[in-house]
Image 1 (spheres, rainbow, N blue to C red):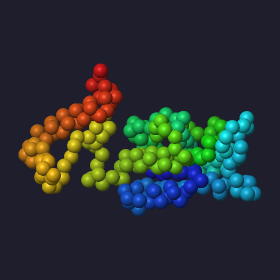
Image 2 (cartoon, protein in one colour; image 1 turned 90 degrees about the vertical axis):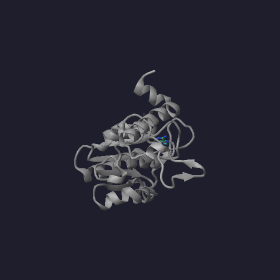
Image 3 (cartoon, rainbow, N blue to C red; image 1 turned 90 degrees about the horizontal axis):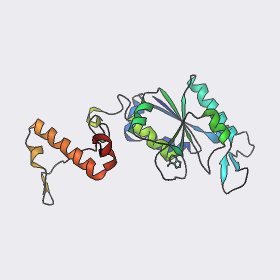
Image 4 (tube, helix red, strand yellow; image 1 turned 135 degrees about the horizontal axis):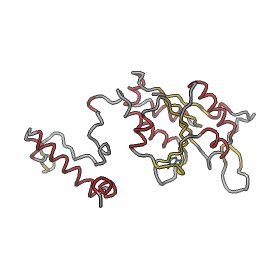
Amino acid sequence: MNFYCMTLFPEMMEQAMNTSILKRAMEKDILRFQAFNIRDYTKDKHCKVDDYTYGGGAGMLMQAQPVYDTFQAVKEKIQKPVRCIYVTPQGAVFNQDMAQEFAAEEDLVFLCGHYEGIDERVLEEIVTDYVSIGDYVLTGGELPALVMMDAIARLVPGVLGKEESFMTESFTDGLLEYPQYSRPEEWMGKKVPEVLLSGHHANIEKWRYEQSVERTRQRRPDLYQRKFGP
Ligand code: ADE
C-alpha cells in the first residue's frame, strides 16, 4: 500500500511514519510513504502558500494553486485514479469500518490543511473523501492523517506480525477487548482471575467473551446497543 501526504510539515509526517511497526512494514516494502511539501509547488516568488479570505474574517487560507499543483505531482507519480482524503473536522467521523474500506486501496492521498482551511475551489477539484477524527479541532491535518494512516496500515496484510494479530481485539466484532494480565500472578495483592490459570481453553474463551460484553455495556453503551439492541 502506498500513502501520499500533501502537507506543509513533511518532516513531522516522515518522523512519525518512520517509527516502530510502520517503519518495519516500510522496510519490508509492504508499505510506502511519501510526503509532498505543498510549499515546494507554490508559484509565489516569496514561497507564500496562504492569503487573506475574501469577505473578511480572521485568519489565513491555504491558496488553491499550490495545493492543486502538489496534487498533480502526486497523480503523476501514481498514474491512475486515486482517492484523495481531506482531513477536516467537517468530514465524516473516522471509524474502524472506514479504516477497513481504505485498507483495500492500493494508493491513498491525504491532504493536510493548516491556517483557517483551504480555498474551496481546489477542494471541489481534487477531494474524494472528507474525513474527521472526531468532534474537536486541531491546529492542522497532520496528526489526524497520521492517526488514519496508522489505523489503515495495521489492517494491511503482513504489517502486523502474528503476535500483534488484530482478529480478536476492540472493535473487530463491535465489542471492546476483555481485560488481560501478565506476570506476576499476584501484584499489589491483586490476583489474576483463576480461570486464566486453569488451562481450560473453552472456559477461558467464555470468560473473555463475557468480560468483553460487560465492559462494552459499561464503558461504551452506544456500541453495546448497536450490537445487542436497546
Ligand atoms: N483538522 C483539524 N481538526 C481536525 C479533526 N478533528 N479531524 C480531522 N482533521 C482536522
